[in-house]
Length: 557
Image: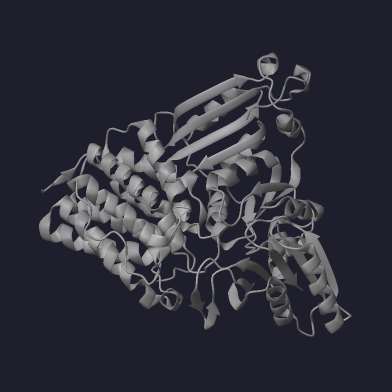
């Protein structure tokens, strides 16, 4: 079969089969997580992210290749979860930019789109690491480009894309020593390979000859395992009566007279009302605001492009129409309050952990962390609720960094991220927060504060392996300090004691232990007593966190 050009129908089939292929193998991708902890969620994150793009493609029904690629990219952008999901969204953002304006695409154009995706993804990552999904994307795109130049056949391009991905994936352990040590290939690269294999199957009706890269792990044994409550409010309490939403196609239409600048745009609309949310990329501006003059919002939007969506609801008339659960009443109360100076959003799991964050000054919580990374859109929606001039995000997990950074990039300079890698570091960061300081000063101070803190966790191994010369057995309790596994033992008390003793030095002053839902307060207190016996100048605090996955979280400062 030879295809000189791909139509919009071809691309839609590729997207749907790519999504289906990834969905079928999400748990398998999860199983390739390097650390043998029960939080391997790369497959889940990539699956949810790509499904968000696929759903947008289905709902919009684009009639050109360029428009459909744009729908895929936008759905991926707002649905991106975890680092793997964000990188995937950037790959297809570049892919979309290369196909912009095209009704169909030939082999050269298709290969160029995959190459543009690689360039965009590399630019989005501060310090690209080879041996990851980035490498697989880059090397597979290079093979696709060769095929395009040699054959002019789109099917041959995708076939070479898959072959290049498989070869590159097999090579990832040679580039990352930790992959080689554990005996697995890169999980993000494997997820991307599944998507590409779906693309090939959509064009040929055939599955590639090899679906899973070779690895020492026995994969066959993996278990596939806003409405506001206005019913109790007087209409006189509603300061801004019209819930107004517009979507602007940047640069299109006869009314364009200004160049779009996010900060200027948002600051202007901020004077017209409250509950403002502005989300923008290179082509679209989406606005939600409560205002008394929706026409002014529309007129201002038209200065930058054509209105492709307008929605206005009279919230005073809705007063007697909607009765929603009492918990949403806070949204109404927030919408009529003056804009506050600061909001701090922490991402965390566990009722006790949430209370700890609130006790140190965090204003908003997003439920998430290991195994359930919030998406860019989830974070953007929480920022909207804050009604604050300045917002600081504490991701508390490395796998949420990119989604948090992407939310900050989408919304503008009033949102900043302090890169806290763990719950204890998030709590420690709050010691550096000063409500009287500027946003830049607070970010610098909070970042400096966490540099003096060591953090760790105890969790259970889910398989036998060896990492950094540490022999690990399934169901062992692993001592993890600052991201490195330093011990693996059968007894949880020994694991906790070993980790904390390794973290202490003569400058240590405060030890904090947070007990998870599978941990033991009794064991935590016994370990605390042992530490005090070693050094009675220490201050040791034990808290109930109720967090999943980790029996204990702890820090030393």
